[in-house]
Amino acid sequence: MLTATAMGFFEGEIEKAVVLALFVPLIISSGGNSGSQATTLVIRALAVGEVQLADWWRVMRREILAVLALGSILGVIGFLRIAIWSKFSTIYGPHWLLVGFTVGVSLISIVMWGTLAESMLPFLLRRLGFDPATSSAPFVATLVDVTGLVIYFSVAKHWVAERSFSWLEKCRRLWKN
Image (cartoon, rainbow, N blue to C red; front, side):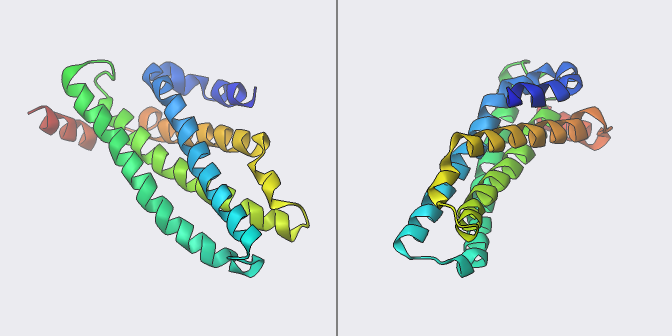
């Protein structure tokens, strides 16, 4: 229900580039999967005493480094998939480069958001006196999914709908040659 609301808010962007809808499952799963993994590791570390509440900044720094690597790898793979596929198909249309940048940048951002939000949530819950294991509830997954869509379509709006990318057109021409 919240996912449909988020997508409805960006209906104009979807209409301008229907191809964006093809990547919604990838976008949703990337943030949720990376966030769930981070939450699981932090909850375990808290449970066995490997980290304490005071270690939240150390954990965040490590997560930032890991998520930059993971997000960048996923972003590059997403972009390359679109770039290579556009050589053999017209499914992404003449603006495949914009779609590729949108997917790549969105994946980096969403993996960063999902991982950092969900890795810090157990610390917050412990601080408030709640069981950190409750942070793996469906509500948290839904929150990351919906915010992931908002990030994705916001990036799409910025890259595809509101910009004139003459330099991207030059890059696209170079790629075709």
